[in-house]
Image (tube, rainbow, N blue to C red):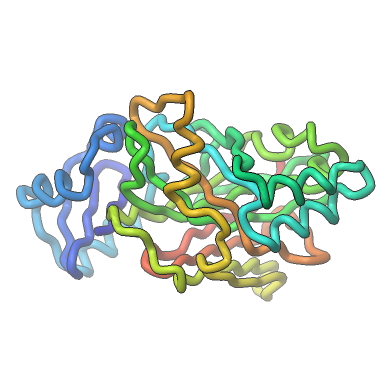
Length: 281
């Protein structure tokens, strides 16, 4: 099932059929356990609409599929991410820390964004004026229930100021947390079953109509399982309305930095495509 948050309604796609429901309280919605089963039951009372009507509703604008949940992120979960972080922080003497966390039992987890810092699908993500090296990080993002169970998936864009993080690993919050530093969408894939390891993640960045950067990876390259990451996030922590957790990136474009006006497109098989224009703040 794919669940879309519209401007004044909710759209569910199930078995190639579309159902239009009311505007929901997404804190209450995502704060429930057994969401796939409950949502299927509730959607039986929604109005079925045609694929064309569904497209027309989505064209009016999508919102990030969340309420006031916190967005967290995991780092150094792909080998490519580990090597890139070691390269960018070598001059600051922090390279060995990324190597150690890659093989450690405990993963790197950090706070990423509040709702107000998350851009809607089609909205604007930002790069910082005080950063000289900025990249998008395409990430499978977990929807986790209050009890810590993975209930769904979406696409996340973890915007990163690599020059700031590379200067000193202690600057990580400034490199990661700022206005427009993340985007989620275009929908929630609601299911408790894990995605296949062959699931492909693709990144494309267009600049003035031309392809400026691209890359792809699969979930087979993800070193830690979603359940493992969810376990560590919920250890000694609580999320009454659930949470979102970005699982790290396996795509780090070399010799590339974003500029204002770029169009970032991230696709994950089974979920869809998240697009955002880049601005500067």
